[in-house]
Length: 502
Image 1: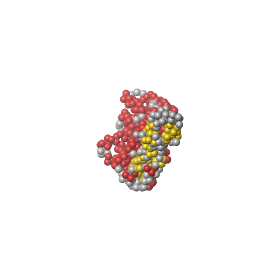
Image 2 (image 1 turned 60 degrees about the vertical axis):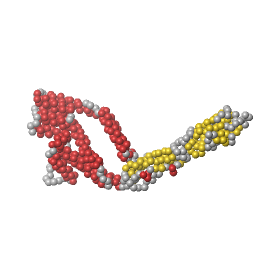
Image 3 (image 1 turned 135 degrees about the vertical axis):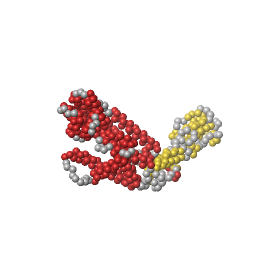
Image 4 (image 1 turned 30 degrees about the vertical axis):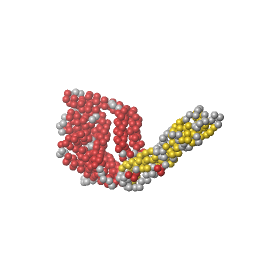
């Protein structure tokens, strides 16, 4: 429907209220007008005029956001002009913008939360409309700990709406005290570990120098020695109780290769030590939860027991690798001594005894044990077979096979051992050369492996709350699991690429 104004007909004379719909303006000049032109003025900037050569109506559609005016210039037959101007048309199709300082905030439970702190809403047409922002903060329980999502909503005059969600982490109000207590517990625990390591190194030195000193009578030793004796007594007592269960004895056989490396009387003792470590971790968790004034959940208890039980396996594996490397490095000396003993006319048991007397360290423990087993009547094949199974070194397997064949079929043992000696010597030279050639590449691989951990620690120091969503949200925990799996795969691939087979 066209409205008449001064003889001209127009569908919409003005639209001062903001609208997000298109504004359609139909214009019909009055009689006597032979041609005309119109100019659209958007945000006070005029566009190019459009000319109409007759008296026909025109339809103008305003689609984009902005403030418009339209100016018509009408011409009659004598080229006299008459100007017709419309009112203001306001079109707003752009949604407002909500600006927030951070995507996540940390607040203390029960404290007053200033939801609007750092929140600002702006609109392209209306300017600052922060006063129109609405939230659902009143419906959220700020007393309970955990992750809370607060929704911010704002609409402009045209009805364009913007919604944004921000995560608030509700933490214990005693966070600083808890953090201080945790730091104290961790510091004491680390100090105890350092003291235990220092004491363990002292025991190793005492073991090396023990044969040159006289053992005093009576009970001596400092508090660490007594604690060590107390711990070994607990392990031994628990192991005696566990030996009555066949299932535990059978399960503990997987730790037999660690038995001599860790100077344990039986593999059950290692299993008992793992159980005591599990109990220790559980006790530490109880102390930590007490300092936090929190109640342990079943998941936390179960996790502490599992970590305490399986963490020694990692330590055993590392210690066993060092032990096996020491045996592997000294194996060539043992072969040389045995070959010289054979040249002197000694038998295999005598050669084993000579090695146990001449060498020290881990290789001495192995050959001393083999000498003891041979003295008890076990065959050479069985004794060296146990040695090969315990150490898992290729050279020991070759040595065991050679001694087994020589013991059964006969042959020149001196010639065979001379060949084994040359082979081991050449292999050791090749291993040292390969180690020298690949040392720089290994250093780079080690740096690449620890670089992500350094990156995480650095960011955590600068922004402690940066990684908090990874452990407080379901999606974050899923991403954390994926990150850990990818990191493990990353380390595995690096080790495969850098591994040199000989």
